[in-house]
Amino acid sequence: MSPELLQSLKVYSQFVHPVLMWVLFGLTLYAMYLGIQLRRVRSAEGEKKKQLLKGRFNIRHHQIGSILLATMVLGTLVAMGATYINSGKLFVNPHLLVGLGMTGLIATSAAMTPFMQKGNDLARYTHIALNVVLVGLFGWQAITGMQIVQNVVNRITGNG
Image 1 (cartoon, rainbow, N blue to C red):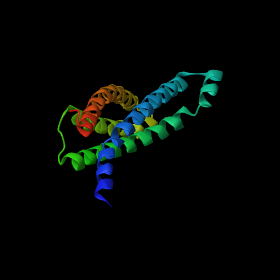
Image 2 (image 1 turned 60 degrees about the vertical axis):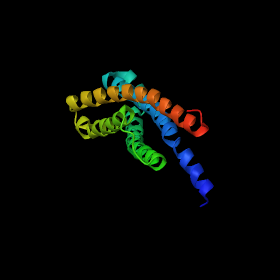
Image 3 (image 1 turned 135 degrees about the vertical axis):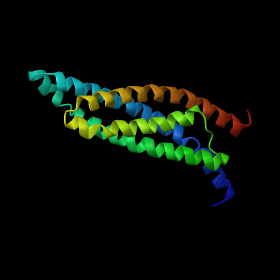
Image 4 (image 1 turned 45 degrees about the vertical axis):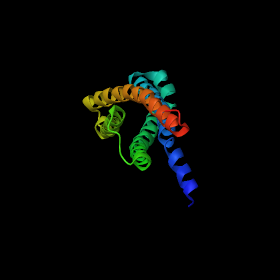
């Protein structure tokens, strides 16, 4: 590969993580919507329940949750790798630490699934609480991530 191509890959690799995380943030909000619908199914009765069951919210919630788990873990690793490749070091800052914490939260939340399937309400409430915290942290990460992207753009364009 030519040095110019390698340099271009190096520059553009810094934007894969932010784009991926914005997509994941949207998917996270969609998973939350599906989870809320799933709770409605559980509490519904009769004809209302039959109508809600047609939405297959449980299957869609599990599928999106699986995609989120895998992509968040891989996205975290890719971001750390791209940062190291481009800077020769990792910047230990709140964005990195919160991102690592979020990766742990989503893994723990997903680990509640077998217990929830057996009707364990503590696991269900833990799953919900972890995911509410996760959504809040994701919003904060979006803001701090855009600040980091702005710093990268300024460094690339020579404005910073």
